[in-house]
Length: 204
Image (cartoon, rainbow, N blue to C red):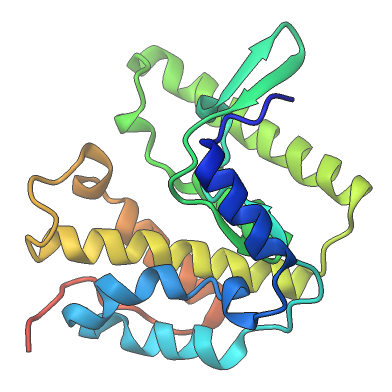
């Protein structure tokens, strides 16, 4: 597989992976900038994530946005993984959980498919997700509770975007931010953690 990363970014990630410093494995760090500015409705959810973070036994370069639209293929062979701005050093479960959230919760009405194909896409992506999780699990088993934690973290990343968008802090809303995706993420986070998150940001 070709590494479709800029040389500087790839070098930085590899150096971080070798570093013993724990903060390189801190997946909450990328959320702090937007969160700290004023998204008070997410405070209980962020506290839960900080209080329940599992120990990181193994670190890896995580893509952070791994799904079929970020893959290039030649027949059945994957030749490149694209779009790395969300990459970070974290537990490998973070990447698996992010993919689970993307494939499971992204609204179909923002996808570039016709209405007649949405049912096919809905069924197809669920089957794809099941195969992905089973295939990954055969190669490297994941603790269910750890995966659930990182799924909650992946939901938080999207909730931060949605809350900032609703507060007008991100400029014109993207189709994803303007959709019901944020509410789906909040509902999933509550199902995983029993913590309800508020997406209507208010400024202090």
